[in-house]
Amino acid sequence: MIALTLLTTAALAQDCLIIRGTLAHLPDGPRPDTTLVVVGDRLTHAGAPLEGLAVQDSPRPGLGMADHDGRRCAVLEAGGTQTTPALIEAHSQLGLVEVSLEAASVDAYSSEADPIRAAFQVQDAYNPRSSLVPIARSGGLGSAIIVPGGGLVSGQSAWVDLVGTSQAQAVVDGSVAVHASLGGGGGSRAQALMRLRELLDEARTYDKKRQAWESARYRDWRHEPMDLAAMQAVVSREVPLVVSANRAADIEALLRFVDDQAIDLVLVGGAEAWLVADELADRSIPVIVNALHPGPTNFDAIHSRPDNAALLHQAGVPVILASFSSHNARKLRQCAGNAVRAGLPHDVALAAITSVPARAFGVPDRGALVVGARADLAVWSGDPLELTTSLAHLVLAGQDLDRSTRQTLLLERYRTLAQPEPATTTSP
Image 1 (tube, rainbow, N blue to C red):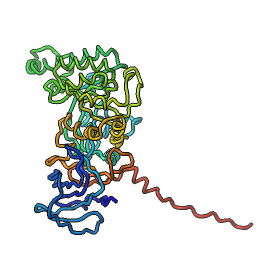
Image 2: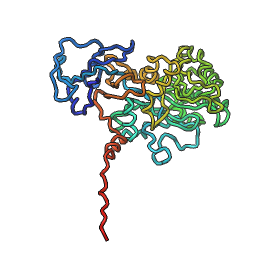
Image 3: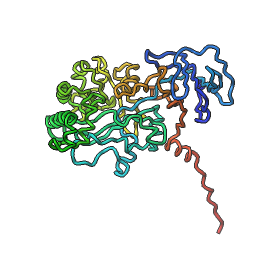
Image 4: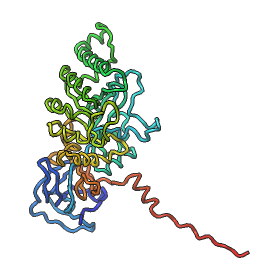
């Protein structure tokens, strides 16, 4: 019987929060009977039960109060639960799209005709009040990487936390990567790589000749100066170039490209990546995989297979799993469970939606239950990758969050409908 109850933010407005008795998924593996201590927005203890903790009863079932380390703490009795880091969606347009077919609510794409749009930053359009954000949180998500679309070079993705009601609160890093696409449907793949080479080569020249250009002592640029400036973080390896590609031949060409250009790469899609797994592993290139890929769907994915993520992991490739969805980002753990069904180890699948994307995109204080990390925790009624498991509790930045959504509010509103008055008849 799970004693953990859903609490309001006000109920946890204490100096600290203690969760005890949970099975915690720590970096070295799951550990039963773990105590987690949250002070402010940080995790200060993740390990053995605290000795001498005197818990006083509270009017709320499953909630007690105790003094710990000079603080008054709320204590959650979490026996029978499992706790993970809050999940991280690595490839979504959450907060950039509200209604897909309503152009006025879609902000993930630049309307520029030029296919090179490196300066385009989706952080400026992120809507933290989107109705889709609470729905994503209901699936245990705490953060997301929101990505641009369209063009050869789509623009810059941003890391957002799914908490707060302003961009200032939610946007952690407005430029964690620059995104590009390689594959069929948009002209020759060879031409696409040629344009990328031109862009990177000119970006390096721009860095050296910028002052001369600004004083009109150097020729004009083929690419927009703002795009060349945006590519400086890629050529200096401050951020990766994230490239969508599925066909194995495209990935091979892309690997030669990044070797020549000496840049960091994250591969997205990779439906046929298992065919070049050793080459990806040799370069430690992370691959963001869609574990729900149904199989061959087009000429770029003829050799796709459901155990792609498992085969990549076996070869030593860092695997990241994503929902690739805005409206159904909450199904991220279902994607991870599907990868486990196809052979990916459970702990690897969990890391693929927590710690691995956090490291790959340069936000290392997310995605792991370690002392000093930000207190983003998801407490589950059981195995988090099982469909029958429910989210019992969600803490983001040390705050208990209301998990109601537009959907749950509509359910409660119409759960009980007023019965119509019975019709009356009169005799003639």
